[in-house]
Length: 294
Image (cartoon, rainbow, N blue to C red; front, top):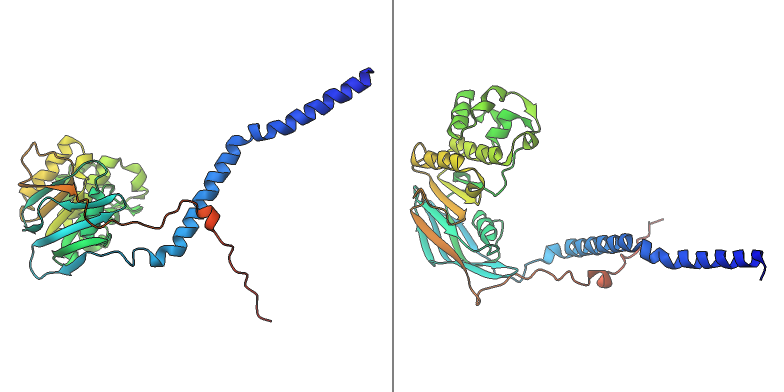
């Protein structure tokens, strides 16, 4: 074998080896591409079936009562993991009550919050509450819109809904006095404020709006102990007649909550099962071609 033939064999071998190694070298990229494709396919399938989602599932009945109380009867919240219910089937919560609802981690507490709001209608039972405008709902993560700080604090009302004195009093009540000189400043306050400060702004809105009820989804558990004591003092002082429903952890060292309820699973209750996205890629059909009219 000549030296030239040997070099040709070596070159051919290296070319074959490089070609076979392509799959090894690009395996992570292929896996990323496949995972992205499956997510997009699943999202597309979900969008196509949104109009029919939950049409056959039972729903919670909502009513707006004339009185200030919140009444909950036989409430069962259907979740993808099963059904959850309150430890008491018939409740009448009166303004001024401080109610704590606790449940296990991943036990449907946020879906219970959304059910009371009216955003999660699937399940069974009956919820009677005052007018929507008389209830403030505080989610786990407070929304702080960008713009002038005064508008971010009075949200969702307009900036002129409260004067500077009222806003300053509300900020002082939640320990945010440092923000008073910046009421007219514009900025991305969702980035400039930390999570604790954003939660306290949500409670400052409650001081300004003075609703009949405040329904909280775990927000009290995310603020520091000093801020929590300040917030609890608001509802035992200026807002003593405002009812509080807190869905969160079993923390009641201060004795703030006068009533405790438990969220428990009901194995016989309704279950919400959205469309299964598994294998969506295989079931996707190409969209029909459309022809422009001539």
